[in-house]
Length: 227
Image (tube, rainbow, N blue to C red; front, side):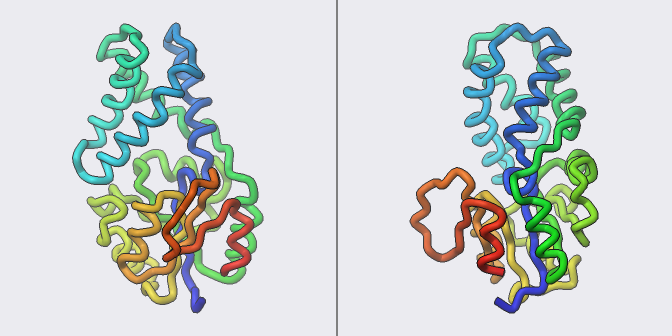
């Protein structure tokens, strides 16, 4: 591969979103005396959150609707009575405290040290702009990346090709010498491939992937085998 630029997704790829999110909910629930079993809440919340993020990528819900809707739908599903005002408060505090916890996937520092010597590294993320920079700084990986591109700064979300073409232009890269590494097949992998980039899929949960048009790895350090 004639690679010069490596673009990473952040959440679920380097930054352990599920673990950090769970700890954030624990903190926020304690702060607001939310009297429900946290594990039961999270079990229902996770697929609902996934569903809302898909809608958000497809421009079918706004940022505000995502923040409120994923909580409202979860509380309704577990039959927990809570006012809209408290849901809004929890939604705000969740974002405020999310970067308090910064667990990274195993091998993050090692793979970034390895790649930084050979390539220019960048981030392309659909995450909210006001929190992504804090995640990078607080987890002490911000210095690895030359450019950080958020979908909010572009005005559309991955897999929209405008995100990738904007990122390539900003990094002074082109699709032929660039590769995207991320966890989401639709947003990261197909989005990158559709603009001519190469792609590596982070399949940390070892899901069955029938598509052979891209590489899948089960750990970050496995990336060394390919670039």
